[in-house]
Length: 159
Image 1: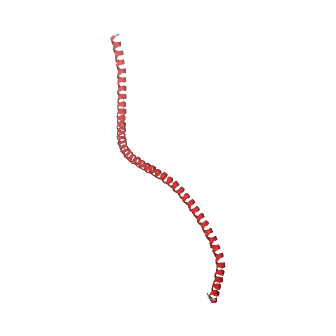
Image 2 (image 1 turned 180 degrees about the horizontal axis):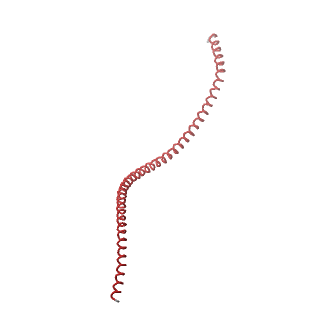
Image 3 (image 1 turned 180 degrees about the vertical axis):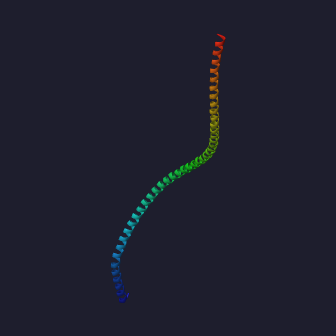
């Protein structure tokens, strides 16, 4: 090796040593950052695991809620069907009541007609009652005359 080459190697060695002095703190910082990054990753993994556990719990709860909602929906559907059947029955009852109401109206009309006829019969009976009173009075008068006639005949016949 020549002296120029040795000198170049020394210069090169010196430059490498200076670079290493600069690089070593950077490498140490990189190691620290790598350690921090590893801790950060572990922390994130733990947080993700806790989030997954929480999500699984939420899924379990939502599944239970979904089951309850499905049960309530079936119950509601059944109640709505029953309500519909009751409404149909009520409609039929209302139709029957309308028919009964019409029939009652006809009966009322017939009763009103009967009332009017009874009033007319009553009036006729009252008229007959007056005639009978007059006949009764005449009979009472005749009865009195017959008594007079009997007394007269008894007096004449001597009994």
